[in-house]
Image 1: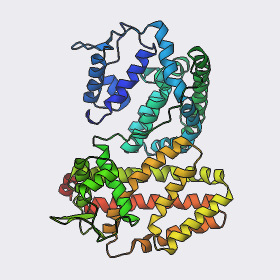
Image 2: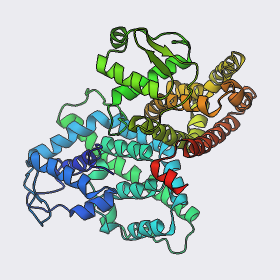
Image 3: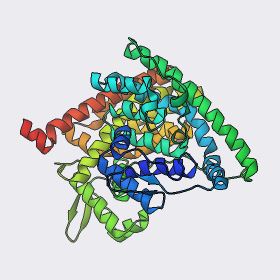
Length: 472
């Protein structure tokens, strides 16, 4: 990973939390760059950037050929207050994660374990059997190892953002120090998955219990009873300006829904800047992305026209490649989590809301827009799921889905997209209409798995990277 993609902040915040909350004392040495990089699965350059920022902030001193040394001394009276001011406003989000994690993270690390090669499995086995060797707490290092096997930066981003939010795994290594670890022996991967699921539920519950005892005391001690809660917010880490990508995605969605009909001209740049609340430069860059995707075409002196379908897509640029990667990774994340999330949400809302959802599918099918089934499904979760963390996660993924639309138009050139997705969407709707929510959830898992596989194959064949072309 590159040091300029924002990931250095994760290492910085990890050590900053430990310094502020008294884990490290003045004069202590931090681990070596190589060791930090190995445990966080990050390049030496990323680690150095984080340590440089820690030095700039007055926390550590870096000497050539030596490990960094702590020069910050947290006043004993401020350590407890620092922790209170951070954790009390995040009480609700931390409490909810215990349930949300079952739907978002457990399916991901289970799949990561199943995909591990023998070498990675051996590394994980050593970490679990001798956890004291780690420099980061078990929940951190374990998930890094397992999720890395999915080769999906979006999933790692989500996990890192969650760890940054809850923070308490940064602060305590008692599990590693007090327990002997997991003795794997000759257990199969499936047996290990089951054992670890139980172990992590127990350890997380124990950690949360201790944290909430502190929060209850801190609320009284520092008069924080009425403090406003800070919800989890997922900032998707990328070395890219967020606004232009988000705006391009929004305009594609408006084209899909008829806000900008094919053949019509988009508003002038100043009007678009005013409408979307961004600068003219952001509008120009977003329109450049749309033109590369074949969704718009600019005419000198006339303006920018919305195209009915892309004749070609210029995928050579970094921005379009980034969009392709985001879409592929979002499909994988959805395919691995949507079954559990849908079942939970459907049973939470009851039969009447399920019936209305089935009717919305039927309406879109009658209108010849069966290709919008993905968005209907995600919008339902974003609006109806009782878990705020799940809603936030699926909201961000829903913003990424329009990136797949231009490629689908090109992939099925000459075909009506409704006819492509009509049968699978209709079958899913029938399950829901007939009172079979679990079958409905299973069908969407299969649809997303197929979409991910087919999309990856299309991109590999139609838009190979330079090194892939050489191999051919």
